[in-house]
Length: 251
Ligand SMILES: NC(=O)c1ccc[n+]([C@@H]2O[C@H](COP(=O)([O-])OP(=O)(O)OC[C@H]3O[C@@H](n4cnc5c(N)ncnc54)[C@H](OP(=O)(O)O)[C@@H]3O)[C@@H](O)[C@H]2O)c1
Image (tube, rainbow, N blue to C red; front, side, top):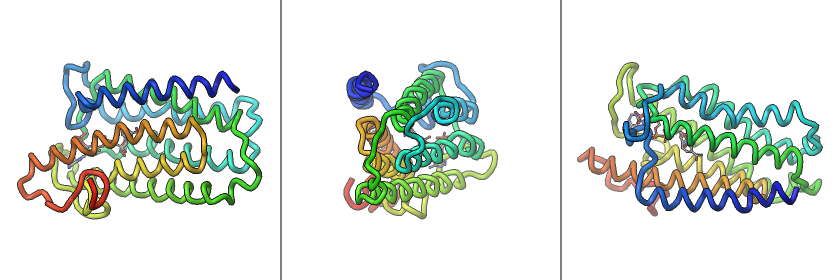
């Protein structure tokens, strides 16, 4: 247990710090920032399906095929269900709905794949084999508030990705100004949803492992929301002036 937690304590902050500093110099090169410098192009639907797959199937294998002492406990079950729910949608539904997405450079695809192996294993190995919550944890304010935030964030993320997808008619590949939902307030509505989701999960799970994932998501997606916002302002003269990058009315 201590060895497993120690790896989360040291590897995850190291990964987060490296990511933070590299994002100061370079947008993660996929989507509108894709570049052939980062390897040959991988079909976008194939890339999302394969790269996210480890975060769905590794957790399922851990829960179903290993003798996991903690999976009979309700808090652990609910937290595992939140994680699986997200990755079920992200792996088996999201990739096949994408319209006209740019091919993903191989390096971005490979990094995302490695991240999903590491994170999927770390989150669910901890919840299925080690995490011990008191019996009252599911009625604790942190668990209730965290679960509600997780749900609100997940719905905001799915709704915002739905708005983006419908900006394009089948066959189109260009960009338009997103409107409606949280896009009325921020350019990175899908990213705000995802950050809220994993921050809620971390609050409900109260662990180093879940906090490391929430911090990673915040670092990566804050940078992407800022970059998209700047990109929209440069591209569209009529871009709504009151819209912020990530946090409504703030930044
Ligand atoms: N947890 C994490 O660390 C993490 C990291 C990365 C992503 N994600 C999640 O993965 C999902 C996708 O992320 P992403 O970075 O690919 O999001 P994105 O850059 O907003 O793109 C999402 C999709 O919508 C299209 N699109 C975006 N803006 C558009 C516009 N103005 N007009 C027309 N089409 C537009 C994109 O096409 P193009 O490909 O042609 O640009 C792409 O297919 C999000 O829900 C995000 O939260 C999570």
